[in-house]
Image 1 (cartoon, one colour):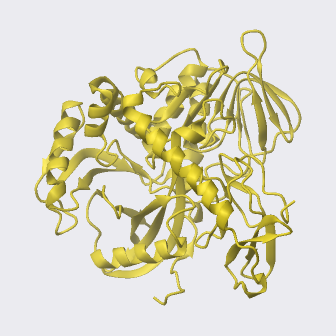
Image 2 (cartoon, one colour):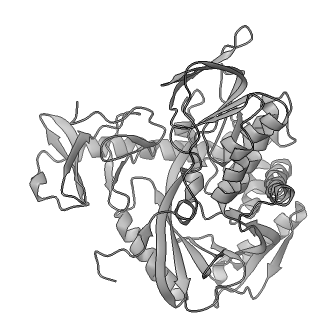
Image 3 (spheres, one colour):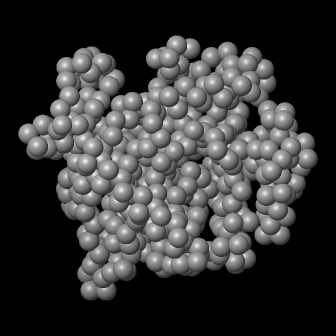
Length: 509
């Protein structure tokens, strides 16, 4: 592999092996019981649960459903999220740790039940999950994780000789976890929502959500009409409204995935190294053999250097462990990590009585997202779940999150100051090669300039529309990423990821 070459088709395996959806766009005003904003695993799960409870539902997606973060996962359906439970016990107590375990275990069984009841052909398979020790120094931590997880009722055990990798000194094993094809699963669920005055709308961008409180219904403003509803579920990965200052209470991270074909059978199970450099392995069956999904190279969005180099390093890691015949696909994804390591699921924030949201799954969205969808549907239907208090977005435990909040926000503030102080006064953008981008100053304004693969120059403002930080070029995805809070934009300035909701103006305007 040459220095400039990155192998593999630059598209998620899940989107490449399923057809695009074609639900209609909203056409005018509409009234329903519950409006759900966002068509990923949280939104689809919540909307279907609401419809099954007899509520009239409108699911609103700005693009096409299940093509965002949910369509770019490694698709592990597991309650094992690295070495998570000992930390939860130490920071939050046994009750919260058990709630987290119960919520994610319930999510696994929810997926398994729907696959069986609806006979969904989505490559669902029960497999053990392993988090293995990076070295002997981590052995004690892994052993305690197994003890804590087992005490919480999880199917956990400590194993001395895990099946992968060969030199791993130990691992914590969770039996009877699962994996699947997320789009095949969720597209089947989405097809079950329309009917009985319930709807799925695509190409319908929501521009605002207003909570009417006790005296009036909620209003969801879109570019194609207004949806009036008793309550609203905001399932947009990062909430499009931010009354609880989510941008300051979590940080964004990016990670990378390869789908590779091996000259050998992949190890039986799902494997994860919870130490830098993070590393993930799991098999995926296909019609012409088994692919192996290799994940890792996590870093904070907008930081960590060349993202193209992250792909190259991941290829090298794969070849260190396996005889790789080919890299079939490559893709990346983004998620948010809360300061206290528990997702935010519930009332969106102060002043919002009938609007609910979910965010902060830390890369474990298949179970956290399913559990969130179940809980949000219950809240919209005047119900609840036993773990609702633990996931409440308005919680605050300074002992568990205070120091992390201070350090993350100090880092964002320092980043803002550094970038504004060091932006180039001038640069010869004529020398940009295809696939390159640079922030320069033109007429006193920072400009984000890039050249696409066809040689065309694109120029937009380099000032993030969220909180005025300067964006950085992401050479692996050819996007502009904000290093302060994780907003991402296309070369033409279109929002790809929040918390920003407004596009970058063209040519610095």
